[in-house]
Image: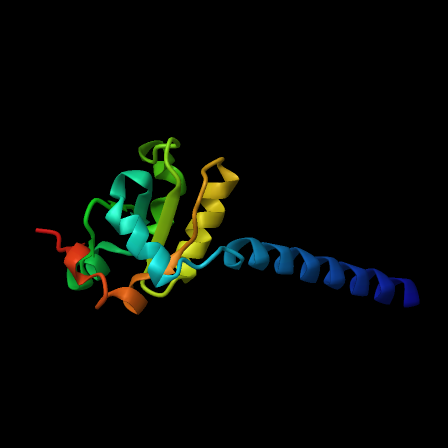
Length: 133
């Protein structure tokens, strides 16, 4: 009976370690500061912005001019649309989905410069915002 308890405890510990590693891989992405974002926006050819929000969110708040829009749930199936010759800055509303997108991109050999949530900088970058038609 004690052996079963130890096996169960070991299994639970292993699952916890795996979950922590997964969480670290999806949340340990560098957050882009406003100053960094401003520099990237001034040189749009130097980075590819990917908006991973849903179309209904983009319709309401707009997106960055020139950004590739791929909802997070479709990212892996649409990786062929993402060029590998530029660093990538995924973004979403608050940054959580962008961190997940950055992890997916990194796993597939893409280089990311960091992530951000558009809500935090929306007012400051309003001159770079476009709305879908």
